[in-house]
Image 1 (tube, one colour):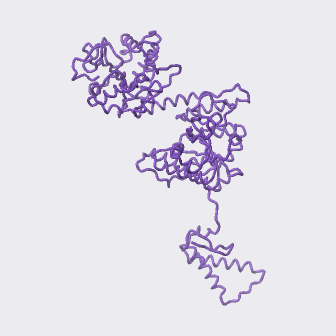
Image 2 (cartoon, one colour):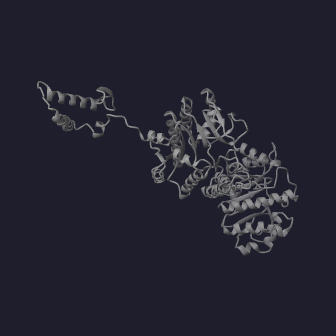
Image 3 (cartoon, helix red, strand yellow):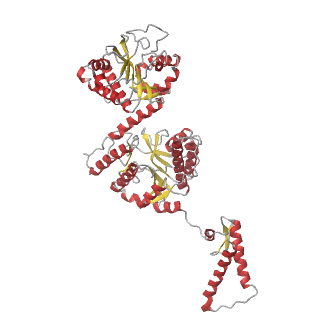
Length: 592
């Protein structure tokens, strides 16, 4: 693969050996035929015309007799910079360091608002405005690239079409993997070209210039994280890929290659997940890499509380699944930063929108995992007092495993854990677990019946059950001390009833409101009527003093609230759904 370099009259490498060698041969042969055996005399005033004629003749001959030679090939006589190199050199500082962020145009207008907030933080931050000129925005799609160009920023379009994802991954996972893998390959390419960088996600607000405060003492990487234990070089600080610095060298280039390899064997893995795996596999040690961690007091995140505006350099809006919530809390934070004038009378708002959206996200995720096809789940409450080995939780799970046709229902069990110990035990058993946070309340100890703690616990239960109905999920609620001997759905008459509830005493009529109810086991269908019932149930707590949820619901029933709301109610026969107040008359028939 060689061609003629007309500048230095020597042979160099070319992409197409046959094409260019043929062209070179024809050019030389043409010149030989024109001059061989003839003495050409050229006067000075006509010299340029003769040269022009000879060159024109050569090019004409080549074009007429070598139609297979493409025009672009003929102009590969000099090496041009590729687009990435041009953008890297345009954005980088004198020391070949730049800032890199990835943007997507396939998202909603809210994502564009995040980009605008990011740029606003740069324009208004302390000594950060000039840094905009040193950001390379890697666009994940043409829409994002065009938007970037309109904003007159440094832009480079990533190409994901050559990334091969796992054939058994879903379309959503494949798209996620494609972008993530492409980003990793791209950053590795940047390092391989000798450029160091700070990578930043767009939901990281830059309040101050971090370069002056980065204690860079020869570290190959400086990582931000969700949990910082105070040790700058502790390898198992939890990583956060929202903001990190990487120095260009052979070690970091090799690390990004191995990071890509790790992600390639996973259906869905982020950069920080891959890095954690690499740390666990001691790859960093083998590469002899020095990794530092950025202190959360300066490089904070929404996973933290009590952020100090006088010390913060950057803030990452993670732990916030809702883009709308991010926009609200980031806007409030930038407004507070703008009002800050060097005094200590301004504090960063408590990112309450993100906190609420995180709770909602956790609830929805757990519900999706536990739900049956018809959006129905089985719900129970769990605290520390029930999780001892061979305790109430183990007994309840045993009843499901051994009950007739009930074992499969375990995967549809949704446990509301009211303390950290019960949450951890729940996760250990690979169950669907939800950990609500109730400010000022603790339920880790066993709550005695009708104690103040017991009353608070049962009323918190009503609030959470109401949220579940609002998410569109119907449910069977069961106390943990209800033993399931058979699959109860075969006995529940699901004929459109809004509420089916067990009884302390059953008079033989399933629709008679005089039956005495028991809230230890009941089914609720999600609709506007039942959501309204739970609203009234919760709101009635204050009117009934220290009564628990069952007494208040019985009072609402007696007051005609069920009829008022148009709720269809079935009272469950104690033959199938018994209690210690009224046992079943047949062990062969009893379900719970």
